Length: 566
Image (cartoon, rainbow, N blue to C red; front, top):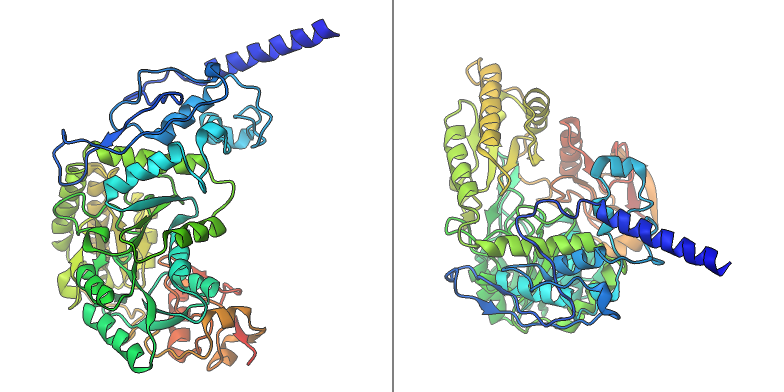
């Protein structure tokens, strides 16, 4: 019996070794990213605005595994190596008998349908919170080190990695600054995550109505004067905002003057939170807007997976200054995030930081050049407009890597043009609107992509502008769909209120019990607790008929709505 068991163990060990050897571990790499966990290491990065050879030490950590034979020795990490990526690679190469989760057991039982799509390598690195991989909520090893490295690169006093997207970061930021009954100042075109954060925190909204461009059917940013006026209005009522929340840039790349807004907020002792989901790349090229952190904000939440290159759903929350309680941020994140975070997502944040740190001052050179060239060519195409500073009176700056075009002169909605470009030319836009299309230029964009985009738009112009620019009737409105809203309940009160379902016609004048928004961009037209207006209903039905996907509504066809019983 003993010899049989010993033989079996030897076979298992041999099988494990063979399995490990067959996973393409000897594939080409630009650089090796081995990380020796039982030695103290220092990693340095180049900050934006400093010379390439001016390294700043982030510090070092030491993590000693249980046995030396589980550690892959190496001379140390190369320049800009990601500590979590290196630790994950080392751990995945262990010759281990795994009696832990996940159930695919380092790819050995990976679902065939998925391995045919992505292979087995992702499963090898899909590991749980092993001791050598650190703990997201109490980091003291590679996660802590990776977060510190990101903080140094992006200019924060502390950075947290997020596996719940920027949504999770926004919710944590608002919960950390607003308690039940506190007032939150925010633009009415805030992302749906800010609304859900008010449900979670019990904060009461004080909305700012941003400038609206009827021709584009697009809202802009908020101005310092609007923020100052709103703060004074609250003071006249004997109230003080617990936080100011600003979206900058917007989905279309429109930026607010965060520097002046921050000065106003701080002069009143109010922290400022910025939804910078679309601006993680800001500050890494002289022609890009400055980052929110550089403009003095207290909390900035960035979608590292958008213009930067981490995996979808991974984001970062950055903190600066000492106005916001760090421990409350940490507690809120632990409440909101999964206790089983994906190490692939976490490692992708580490890798994106290392990628950017290699050449922080030049990494976006080619993307900027392509974006400028594309914009100039598109402006010359008959019947197509390009969103720029002239479209809004209060634009502080605009993201050159976000190209938004207007199509109303072609008689096409953005949804219709999107379908034609995709089906006929293989060109896929980031965002379709009622009267516009938005294209995101990023580090992976190549000249061939730009050529296909320009060719497709020229074909649209040739086909639909041939009648001298005569416009087919498109959805149009003289003000934002939420400009005349009224609030009867707070978002939290409405969320937990008893509700009933009524037809759309019967919902007019009732208090909404659900959040309804076209997605993307995820800007709510109706918010729980608001009175449902004819303008909002007309807009929602109009964009739906134009091809928009309606998110949040319990009835996606919008034939009925949930309203609160008052």
